[in-house]
Amino acid sequence: PAPCHAVSVIAGKGWTVRPSLVWTTFDGESDCLLFNQDSADIHHVSSAAHVLCQIIDECPACSDDRLISELASALNRPVDNELIGATHEMLVRMDRIGMIQRV
Image 1 (cartoon, rainbow, N blue to C red):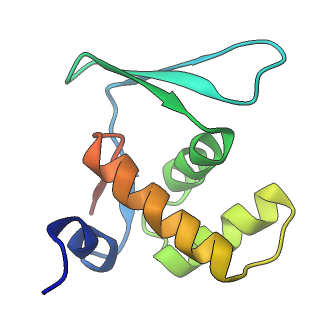
Image 2 (tube, rainbow, N blue to C red):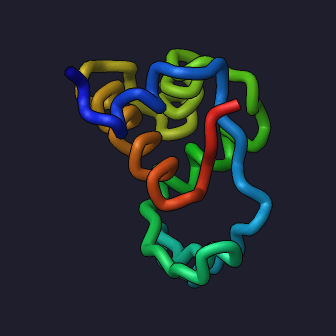
């Protein structure tokens, strides 16, 4: 059987960003810090994950395939197996730490 965390990537129709997030960016830095007010956890978030979160916020009903396409466009890179795998891993991690949830 598949690991439990893999189920969230295939279940549901889209994602939504949890409203309890506070982002902090620093001049000259591409990564940022994220404070989750619900859990009181602080996370170091890559610029790609931050961009993906912004895309999800703008398109909560988007399929994973559409999110991957939008992310590729935002990062100015092709959709390939590396990006697909990395995006799925980011979605699982973002779900696990409470940044996003399936809708």
